[in-house]
Length: 293
Image (tube, rainbow, N blue to C red; front, side, top):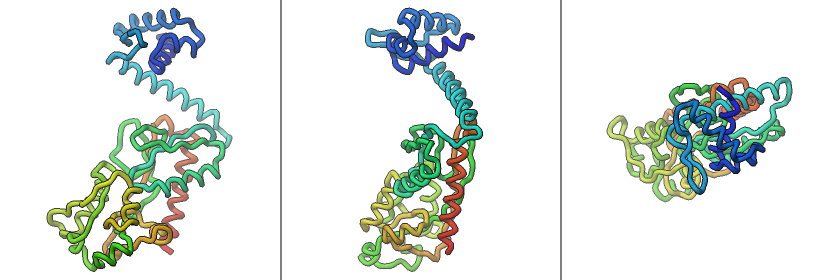
């Protein structure tokens, strides 16, 4: 199989035009068209639907595109490994963070990493939008995805001083039934935390119902700061010092959830990924040690 034909196919699929792909690859439009036709004949299927406004992948074309994209990424990753071998990590690194982590904490981590590795161009992408590395609560294992544990995050319940003054302090978990409880949407990341939080009040019976559900840890933090109710967040000194939140029911046993990094298995030897995961492990360990003091 001629790899150059897949290269042409890949470029056409990316830009949706034979003409534009030819300009990028410095090949005539007719040569691009001929190469795609030859590839379709070799595979025995139509890869593109042709139209007056460009081309679009067929169902089979989408399947082939995903496989070819994986091959291109593997080649790029191999180049990165040997490009960075014996040198300081460099290049673009796209990182996605779990919704449960606050954007303020993420911003600080990204800044500190950039100070240590200035040749790595970090980009924070939205959760679920891809990225080289996903940071968050660990999930069930997936094929072709490497998972490494970074640390453990201890969770607690928090509210603003104003909210507790208005609604009254809590002395036992059963009183949660009388309060405004705010949780993450019950997605994969937030479910384990929600199950713990909402199960505290009734003592093993039917769990509490959240009054408000939000999309991210940052939303939880903002709602708690503005006196909207009680939330479950990772225990952090910043919550007390900078955000002036009060720990609710501190005597209740708080769970610790594993935080890890996920990345495609072909990136396991990538210098950028190794540097980033090692950095996170060190920083989380420092944070946990400081919380114990």
